[in-house]
Picture 1 (cartoon, helix red, strand yellow):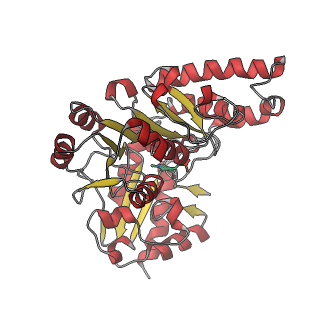
Picture 2 (tube, rainbow, N blue to C red):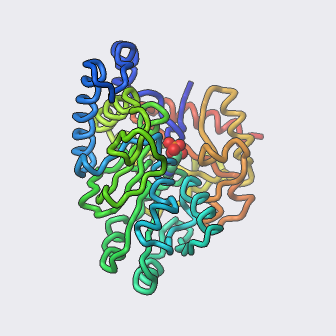
Length: 370
Ligand code: PLP
């Protein structure tokens, strides 16, 4: 199998596999129990939180474990939280992941005003519009992707936060696709909230993180047993938390230059196949993602042909791939439905080899001969 869809999810990191095989079976206790089995896990979680915080450049006090980025994003964008923050205006973009987009569309129906920042065909946000919103609107929450999951573009979050925080507004970032691919320092980029998901870097599915610079201002999405200081109650997912720590440590060893060399090799070779264009190359991008229009071809057809050969890529975000709707991101770049229907996303990892790319190219050649 050649798996080239790491922005959708990643196989378990090597250290996570070892943990599953050697340790997990004995670490089943409830970390909130008073007897020793639980207390040991609770102490371990304290250390893990400190280690993760160190890696993300923030205080451990600002981190809470969630079930994933969808929950983290929905916690920040919950009505109760926005009310406590005094926010009625939200500023965002059409390039966001559905976890944010669908939440914002719901908030719109509940009376919140959403201000959509425009972007160009390279996926660059209009910073003048951001500045205008920051200058002219009442208390706002700005929410943007750090790294776009479909086209790999990096938003200039530090610049955006310095523009909007001058005016006292708040910033949330969806940093899911930044993990492992960018050096992260949450305090340095100066954001109020950041959402993360473990399974994109080889941790378990169902574990995520929410960072809050002022945790006391957060209103929990759910209420219950007081775990996570009451900000995210529910029995702690020790195994998921451990897998997050292990996967994050493995991700620190990724050879980003090698990943980029393989991605660039793909983009060079694919251009020889026919009428091909690569989306958003003039913008800053992370090293592993390539979004490619194979003009006149159907990405749905290409995907099914490749999957018959055990090669897995995608048309965009996994949430919408079941329905094979053309990507909302490609449409938001200003392309028509036909162009969007010809786009594939290849997202590689540290374990992807040049030979994997060559096999993909060979198989794509056959697609082009139809
Ligand atoms: N945000 C981005 C950029 C993503 O890629 C994803 C996963 O597809 C999510 C949010 C949602 O993460 P999860 O499914 O772990 O809740």
